[in-house]
Image 1 (tube, rainbow, N blue to C red):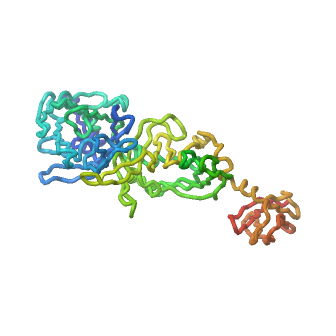
Image 2: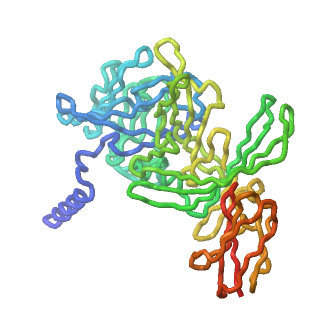
Length: 510
């Protein structure tokens, strides 16, 4: 008997060390700092997975601990933020399971609370007692009058969505017929949306275990899991009034560097765009043009998930960010959550994280919002592939080459991106050539186009020291590069051009 007590004491001590405060955390439906994922078959074609969290806390006068859910934009029809929220929506303090979570130590109970919102929703509180005796019944709500019964509390699988993981699960059945499942360690596993107490409101079930930002689908390093050398090809088609595209843009981006600086993830890249002009109804057509090589950077906070280049991140389902001034004042970027799965492609595979721009309009009780059409600015990311923004408005990721264990893996066709972002050697070859090379006393530089005023040649040795320089007369296509008196070895000849960046050619002295 004494031996068994020692074993139990040691196990309890180990649990306390591994999970400090576990007794206070046990059975809490939601915990601060975690992102929760819920799904329901009835809306899987619209939202897929709904993401929410607690984001503020305070102590009530009576000693209760209160946590508030993140606020959101909620469709008037009572559904959730949809894949294309064309219906009118309103700002709401009530999230999928309420506005607040309250813990009352004296009664050993939790309460999920809705707040009243005009004619849209009445105030409502739902009392949960997962630690009560099995079979016991209590008053769960006064308006409407509901009772709750702890139907069971057994060790069972948490949910099919997370595999074979098991925990102690309490099942609470309301007198309305609605059922809630609550895990001791992982919180609310299932319940009706908006705390509906009657009617056909669908049951929402946990899709993934609660996770910190770093383990969630909105984490920047998950969405942008890129490495130096990765190549990303984007295609954009812009329709004319007749519906057919007049122009198309094909942009190739190559990741140059990836760095972790403090809590920030930093990428640098080079990219170049080819524009094609289609001849069709109301389209003039014309030869394609290639733009200059440009550089850029992407920056993310791994602590908050925010990025100055992607202002929507890391908003959850229904969360919004307001921007704009003047006529565009009040425009919102809205988080749509994780949409249903896409087939495996360069755009993703699996669920996609989505955001859309929507607009204000005045109707009845206060300002409401709508996307107006399905052509509003829109952005998608693919957490499963980590390729970053796979869609921004009418621009789609259609081609990628990624280094996996040092081996390039290609997706899509490179045909639209050929000759974009040429190597330095290829750029130099397109401008000029040297012959003979190697050379003994002199090499001849041949330009592919007549020199413009201000063109100049600079010869440097392997240490970067200038050993010779001279201008190239305007209109000339050839120039001699003297090597007499120079020691044998490698030299770099730089062609400086007033209208463009210089190019460098390698020259060997025999």
